[in-house]
Length: 256
Image (cartoon, rainbow, N blue to C red; front, side):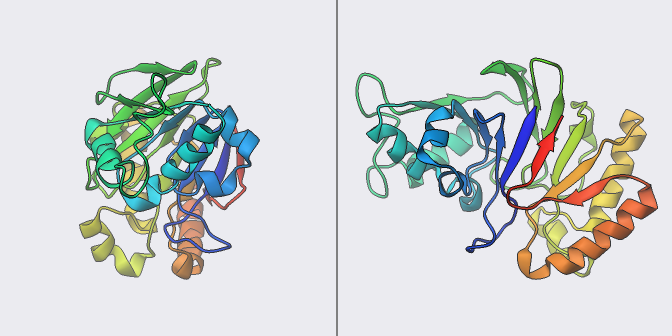
């Protein structure tokens, strides 16, 4: 399984992009910078998008991708919880901001919305997918995605501390998890449902206690204005845990 990081941050600029991951060129996880990062042919290869929750930086490019596919007669399946799909259709694909691509063109709409049940194993384009609740607002979930060859990665989406229940439902060989702010903002991060390196350290200790191992870790959703501080603190954490913990970046390629 090959995972390409299209966007790794919580802010957008020419250099940094909102969160989006691409699995083997066919399944996207979150769509913050999906259209902006892919060519038209690459977008046409997409078969499915998994959305972790309905915050703007995770769903921003859904309308743009839908428009591009609509003009070429292609379709795409979008999976998430019902609450996230409702956010998408209420605020973006609502015939005011963008067309209702979930309804047009008849009889074969461009966008097929498919609600997921929490903790239920689903087969999506040959991958085994489980949506796992995490500690964030807007009904956020993380995803464990497992390839047909048995390679498994877990993406947390946005989450704060308190992931012990989440860990019990997953068994990944790679952990892609958010770290939004440096340690000096620990209080703010926890209240907003985000992690700092110190909070991540506690969650990784919890993971190891529950699962008996610690997979390689890649962090996403960093605030680029504060990334140097985050990077230094992640480096110290990796050394303390004697584990691989790396910051993601736009264009990063991960292989399982």
